[in-house]
Image (cartoon, rainbow, N blue to C red):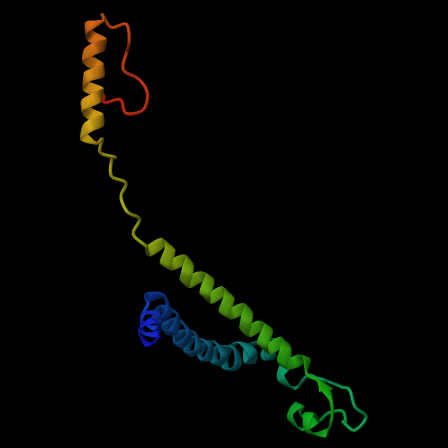
Length: 151
């Protein structure tokens, strides 16, 4: 059982997945910082100083209007749609950046040059025999079809 686990754990796909998860977590933190520290302040400045993180709808009568979101959550039930807007923008940015990265990687990936398919020796020999027979019969049959070797 230990041998099977070792084989499973050291498989290329598992290691690649682990590396991807670690890089994805780090990338997520970077994007979260970009959204929170770069994009949202710009959006706030464009919209007149709106701070999406403090937008909520009180669901309880114990929540006073105008409280910051963190304090309103402590006071009672609130629907924090501002946080959702921030997370949705975060997701869109992550998806767009991943699209750009994958698109760039696909363009950089070296496409293997198509090499002409080499005709196997036995097929080439059979084609030569067919051509000789066709010449002996007076050219009644011309070489054609798959496997034909042009001369």
